[in-house]
Length: 115
Length: 109
Image 1 (cartoon, chains in turn red, brown):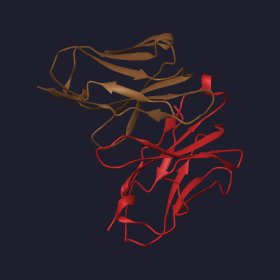
Image 2: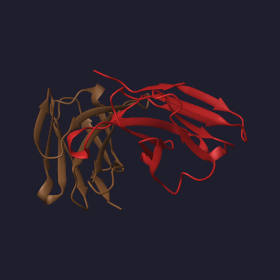
Image 3: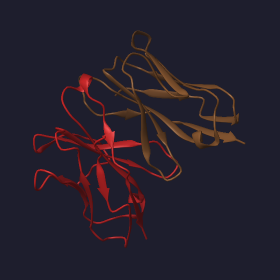
């Protein structure tokens, strides 16, 4: 079964540093997403991406965050200047086709720790 | 936005017991999925079930879209069933998946 691949699985970074989280969605999928989950809490939507642009973003997704699909296969989430409260598990997801016809497939996540 | 509520928030089971987890949502949806989050934090897709009933081994799920709820059944529970179970839904108007708060399940040997 096709998978969404995320790298790295764990990342520790100093506060104020930039981090890039990488994802390879399923190849024929059209819609891409980032979610995050702070330890012990629910999974929260960050941003959706379709046709090379952001289609929706949450209040969490402020100017410190950006997404990019640089080469048609990778999908990245950049945090420009990390804060302690950015420590969380970040999930990438993708889906294809009409919303009623396709399920969302999630990657295994990147656990980000900001120290 | 759409609200997703799961109950119960916590569930402790003896190995071999059966259980039912519930997911209520506040608006019509075109997509509903159940996930199991394992101890390593991975979200494992269990069911894609916007309507109807599906079974996969000891797990089954039913979604009654017209009444805005879904149920996940765990039969003959095993310790490996422990973890957090999430329900997530999406509407046609917006395409993001909205998660419920989860049900934390602990199966004791």
